[in-house]
Image (cartoon, rainbow over all chains, first blue to last red; front, side, top):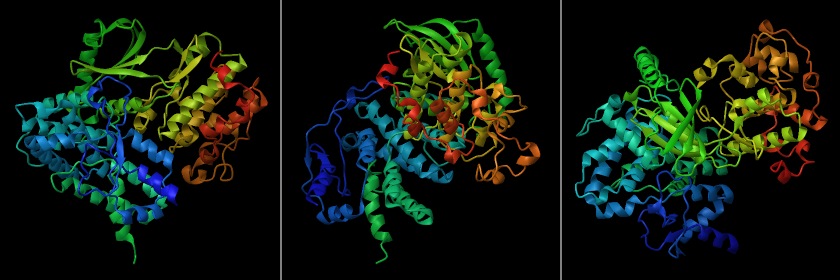
Length: 270
Length: 334
């Protein structure tokens, strides 16, 4: 239907100042121009959206495909999108290759430790989310003395915090640093970094993640039992691969929708 | 491994931690609490709990009364405790007129987490005990509507409170406004913490928890709200009004010992039910909860329903006939 098609395109908007990432078929981007003015102590974050344009280069076949299979409850989807914060670090990393490099190492380290302890995918996603928000908020990119060890220390603190939020058992700080790294931090340093991260993130430790969207999509698809578990397992594998892939690409929360497309095709019996 | 996440003083180094805690406690007892950097003037100690202390303070900039909850971080070697991170993170997401507002979070000396909340005059427990329970039927109805509004909001966000009781229901006296507080257990699976709490607090605990069920959901909060409802009407905890040796026996005397017919699944949950509890015939809610209009009693019976799957939801309760004859706007202008 023409109306539905139009409404769907409305949801695929891109702020003109950001280039369309190569890997993204679906890319929803809201530009919160007041982000940089947010105070750590503020309870509520007010934002405004800049002018956006419809993506005229949208892959027609994908749109048609999605239109047939997605019956999203608009209210819940809008709620998730409204709560999502734009990952502001992406643009910064393009200008600061040293930070980009240390961030990539940090992300790889997080994924290894996550696997070592069999933490959940959500723990890994949360840890990377915290790290990106923290790095941006402290604008290491402006520091003439880039300290790679600071990024690694932040990674340890972020993984510890993510495990505390999500896992039942949390290893000691020293035990957490099982994977080989250039640095080994003592408990006191990690403790202080934890406090710094919590303050920088305004204690908001339950962000919208790609998994939030996967949970929603799975319910809408009506997948149950083994099929549901298998679907989620594959989606999580793809998400972690994206993390580990080229330069640990920035992961938007609604990339959960992108993961869905290849998964859908893979499950197609034909 | 940190095996007792819910208990900061883990078994691994509980001896050392307790010693450290005592030392800190004794050192601080005679001192003014450190509110450095919080821009607060401490007026008095409002409460001392196992996790820390609560102070009444004055905000230096606004002149407003606030409540500061100061949580001692024990076992600093493990950083900020998970329960604190979870509670604060959760409170940051809850925005509702009937939920106490967390104004800001501060950390001092890497030893305390200071949570600054808006201040309310007193809690419902204090209201019932010291001011005579709200005999005014309209006040009971207003309070119930506000409590249910807050609970329905939490449940819509998939958040359970898990510890609803009169002392966690705060009251703004002049506005007759209700605000829920203390989400310490919300979102956290903390069985040992639940069971080690002092006996009094179990008066509001749902039967499925008392039966040691590990699978429970939003319905547990509705049971607690039902207990609060009854207490506002009769002026004392409902289970306390019944002669019984424990809470579960009191519930069974009141509503009848459950059978597979009245509570499907009960024989699997409590195989030895009839060894420990005789087959009581229901005394009935109306025996104890007098002076409540019929529609109120009907709503109460749907909240205090033994079978969790048949218990009314908060959202449905708000639409119950008990509330239909009242202009909701006027409720907030009492």
